[in-house]
Image: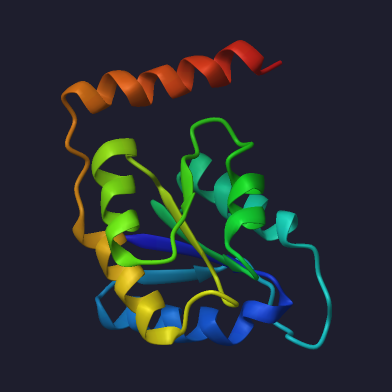
Length: 150
């Protein structure tokens, strides 16, 4: 599986730690930036890059990091078909996959340290969408997207 990574300048260090962790699990990592922690950037750019990579099937899943994990996930969620969830602990990541079939997990470098971040990533990869009544709900989210898309 290919996994896309994106982050802002404050999160470059954690991104590299997580990329190594994911590679050690046997997945291929694609870095969509940013790469220089000394050059301020705007997180929506990198949320969009990873979301578009999933949309175009260049990668299957995404991991995003910014200060809180919220802003970058909001940017990614503007791309139809993307379901990104900001998670600050593993249980939320697991439930987000099982119940909402997320394809991107995001987190905040100001919120979680490397070990919790690794546990969040593991929960994201280990969980499976449960389907059933959750399929109807995920489809409802897609219907909302269609209603408000151009």
